[in-house]
Length: 187
Image 1 (spheres, rainbow, N blue to C red):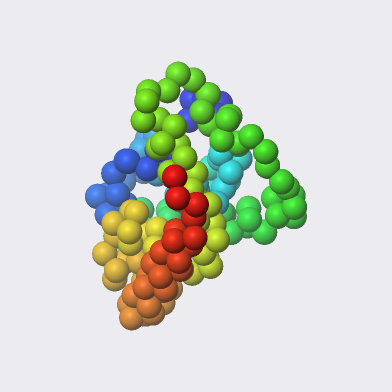
Image 2 (image 1 turned 90 degrees about the horizontal axis):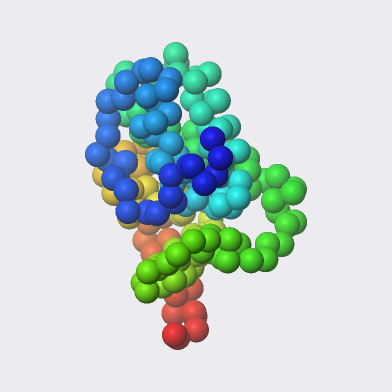
């Protein structure tokens, strides 16, 4: 599947909490979850140009580990955990860490845009940059709770901490993000 054929990385799709049961047909699993995987990876700092390859890694792990999935576990929570681990490995790669990107915004702009599209693209790019500056623990909790709209109990389960710790990470992430936003140039 070519990058142009993959789903948009627009963040307006259904939240993680809206899904629990998934069919186990591999083609259907891919179709039903590729947009979610794409979005989760972008939240975790995977560059647009690498989404196709990193998404493929997620699905390779998913299909290899699928027999181990416990039915009492939320499928989406389990899948998000795979996304977190694959994205963490991606960020640790030396080629990603030392690479300086120029013009990624221009590449994303691609086709014809409506009058609000440049603002949305800028806001999305800013959000991703700010999220990338958070510690992994804070970013994970913030993304799961605020953007994917999961209940805090499930967030804590996914990230492997107590609920109170997850709330503390969320508060710290909000505070850090607000501090970063206050330092952004006014437009």
